[in-house]
Length: 280
Ligand code: FE
Ligand code: FE
Ligand code: ZN
Image 1 (cartoon, rainbow, N blue to C red):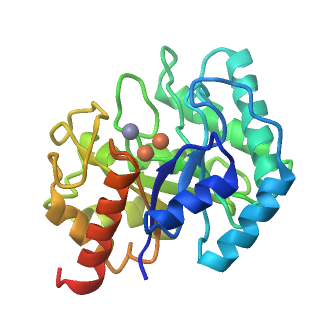
Image 2: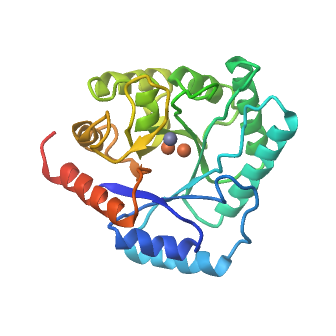
Image 3: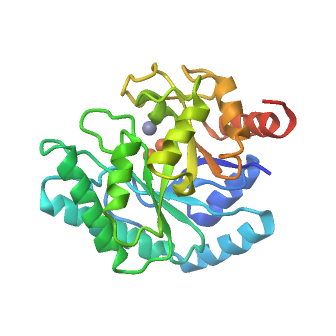
């Protein structure tokens, strides 16, 4: 059975997200660990978590994905900003210890002035520092569109980061379809060869989650503007191939399309139907 969900607001806590997910036919979901543009996280509500875990077990919700806020920058030149990033990620990860099997996705950041090579060193140093705490949660590096000086725009860049992490057993990659397409990977016409490339450079065993987003812009545009499934430059047929692909179909899929809950419900139903009842 397809594991699919969408990004949900975490404002009302875990149980509320779980209920929203079930309501729209999802069996997983993604959420921000704190306000995406802010720093402060709400106090940990252990009762809410306990109620959520019970609800999740009863309704078959599994392996949710936490998303780090956008304000972090693991490849920043300013050591104070890197320190802030490290502390925030550690705080998020210590909270996620209460949610067994959760994964934690983050944007590798922007190198701004000092170049991608130095950015790679900074990100891997930060991950080595985080690893000292021994958190259980798998940390995912998201593939990025390469807007400005954004890191993670190529499989080579992600691989260079992972290679420098001493214990990478809890490290994976989240592939965002809009981002890789905007980054120049033609998943519409060459999905198989792109997955082969991913396997050679990073290793498919590192691929732990997929963000399903259509793109408002063309291949290689480096823009990062998400579109509803089937209404952008990627198109529905490419998403059908993705959810049916033997290398991908066992992974959890997360929609981050511009939608309300009803819109997400329709996209989930559509992709389930395509994945389960149609020939590729
Ligand atoms: Fe993201
Ligand atoms: Fe994404
Ligand atoms: Zn995006």
